[in-house]
Image 1 (tube, helix red, strand yellow):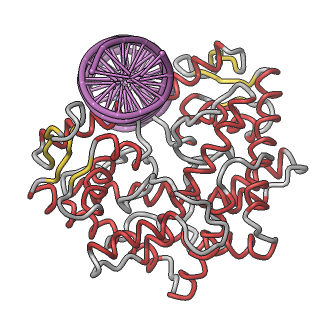
Image 2 (spheres, helix red, strand yellow):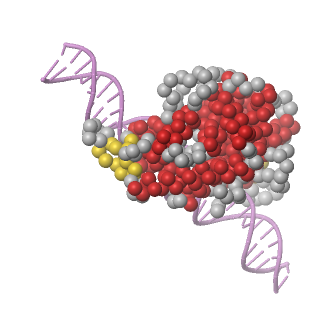
Image 3 (cartoon, chains in turn blue, green, cyan, purple):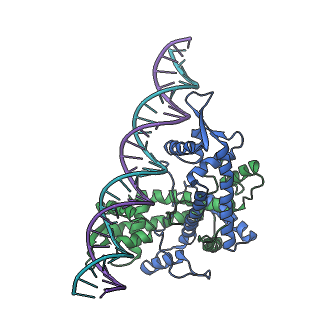
Length: 194
Length: 194
DNA sequence: AGTAAGTTGCTTAGAGCTAAGCTACTTACC
DNA sequence: GGTAAGTAGCTTAGCTCTAAGCAACTTACT
């Protein structure tokens, strides 16, 4: 009925359970284990969707962890990075309003206030009054903020590239995966009930 | 260096920005917009990984929203559902220790305490002392808890099935997507630096 | 067998996000 | 042109999750 602020997306009734042995062959993974457990106790359940969404969720989890660590090595956080990157992507003069930032990042204005506080204290951005609207504010990247975001975006992409390589996905498979995901993403827009 | 408690996985420096027009053709989506914006301000960046991970992240977001709403219609929450589903999957007598639950769900014991409090107050599970270990506890699904989790798991799967259908993915494409995601997931295990 | 270090198990304090509340500007009506 | 309703903009309260602290059992050493 209302917006509700998205988070992660299991909904498969699974999450952690660590693997015992190291499965090197691409035959069985944690999602198969969950599905197998359901099959044992509820053989009637049609669990095919978990094959896709369970893995999508876990990829999100694992990669989130990795890029989070990469950002932390640079002294920042993913949430903070998102703010800096949005300003960077907007181009010169790297200025946006808090309102624009919070709607772009799908964040409430309260959460944005907190992030801006931290980033401003860290000297990565600057708040200044909007000359045309006395109630509004302008948020601008500082030199330090710009330098940090350049390093961070490269680090994040490196991490993702490394994962693709470790997975053994070549260019063709990567493109195919991207195409299927694009199609899937188009279907996940809410509004079409079960 | 430490566990750190995963969350979501953008790291692409993007998140929200709503689409202006309704793109019905499968030609351009929000991820393309982000990539295009980066290309405009940083043409040197090799943004191919965003094609995959950006979409994975957004699918997670969107589907998380949808199943969250489905659970809420049943009067529960995804976090609570995860607890109930883990107990259900364990089979009769639907009993696990808080410790086992928190490690399976990759949750701290503190978070688990809170969830168990709520679920016990709602009458969906019961805490009882472990007869063999005087410091330990047993958590058991009640009749109401069992009934709820049966309905909720079906509702979540229905939601996911509907999304696959809306995306127009047939069985072959779904299987192919699952296979590529399995491969990708195997590569996202941390430990192999950039 | 006695004892002390180590491990496992759970409830209480701090950090982050979302939802209500207040201020300032706009604009449409008279 | 004055005025009042409406809207946009931002900081303060409530709640959930993670990180430190306390109790109970085990086990290895003497």
